[in-house]
Amino acid sequence: MSSTVSRVLPHIQVHSGYVPGEQPLGNQEVIKLNTNENPYPPSPHVVDAINDEISKLRLYPNATSLQLREVIADLHDLEPNQVLVGNGSDDVLNLCARCFADHDHPVGITSPSYSLYSVIASLQHAPLVEVPFEDEFRLELSDLFASEANLFFLTTPNAPSGTVFANDFLSAFHDGFPGIVVADEAYADFAPHNAVGLLAACPRLIITRTLSKSYGLAGLRVGYALGNPRLIEVLNKAREVYNVDRLAQAAAIASILDQSYFRETIGKIKATREKTLDDLRCRKWKTYKSASNFLLTEPRTMSGEVGIEVAENLFFHLKQNNILVRHFPNHPLTSSFLRISIGREDEMIMLKETLNKWTTHE
Ligand SMILES: Cc1ncc(COP(=O)(O)O)c(C=O)c1O
Image: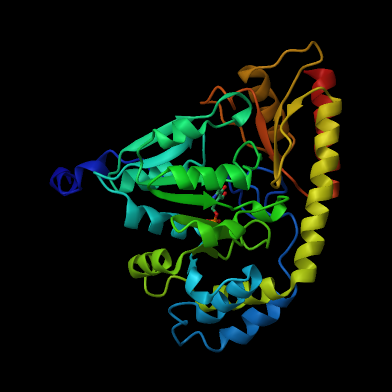
């Protein structure tokens, strides 16, 4: 056994895998506000699309997801050679690390940020350069430039704050930074703007998107990259051959083509988000304005206390009441906060009632 372990590459021996948010088994009745999934089902057209594909499952899928890439290119007014599809956007982020990071090519991230970035940097044995956020999740361009990373992951809208970077900021970052900038736009469909319009002038910009959040397809695993055809070709070379299966390609096409259903669900989530923001601010809980499908809020007791213990106490109170949210205790910008995904209206009413009970009884 020990000789088997000694064969494992040293950087993999000390590597820690990604720890996903809790996914309860299907038979538990919970209000799941911990992993930013869509509370609504995917487009009803997905059922027919998948049924049509089942009889073809003996055949390999289209290796380059060509038809899906055409649909995505159309959606963003781009060309198919500017699109690469992955098995979730995590697959695409991984490909970026595979192509642009190694022992001599550091990865830059903000601190805090989506914890997968450090995991994929570690798999590449790449040094990690962390640029800390200032108060209120602000970033200084000079700190980003000083990172000297070959590849920088910037989440916009940011997770876990929900705040979005202005396009002027992104293009100034791209122009002053010699490496590859990945704008992870997993939540961009909930935001007032996105960076797609920057692609023409920013040859080292890669935008990543997912169908897990806004299209309600987290269980299917489809994400994509948008960028300069030369960069997309590089990622394409490093991709698994059949990285997106037949069912996923068909369901993704059906979902994207059903833009009226998409707009309806996004509209409902944004309206619920704004109502929830008002409610939390009425409680005098510091809550960031969000351009995504979650809110980062700092719980406050009746006597005005805030802090890591208060956040933890509310986290467990919600859990006891079958409501799952997320607490990130390891960073000063998040330790006294909870991140709450936006659920259906009825789920958020249950949340509100449970918060009221906590405030009056804690
Ligand atoms: C910032 C960010 N990027 C990417 C992802 C992963 O998305 P996917 O489900 O497409 O792998 C998530 C998921 O939570 C996320 O928060």
